[in-house]
Image 1: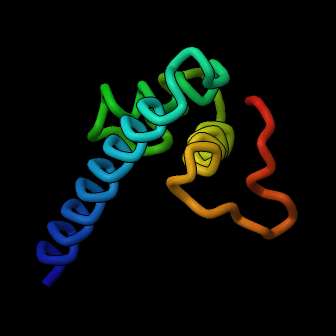
Image 2 (image 1 turned 90 degrees about the vertical axis):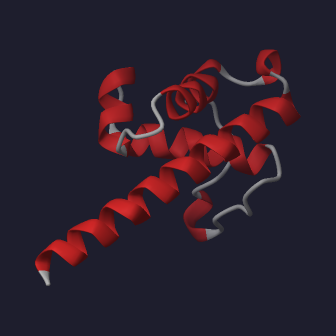
Length: 97
């Protein structure tokens, strides 16, 4: 049923957004907001404040690309020890964005 798929996708998106917000809070708590590069902090705060946003909406809100927003978020989580680094082509090398 098409409606079931749409509802399932919406539920998955909502759950992922809630996880992002929880991870962002945990990372900022662990690293301290002043010790976090501003690009990382901005993405984390946007994910916390606008939990229902897609990554594209977060990027648009911050005036960056979707890739820049998600990369900054991923680097924040790696720096806080919440997520393991992605070892493909140095994807999670700690650089400021």
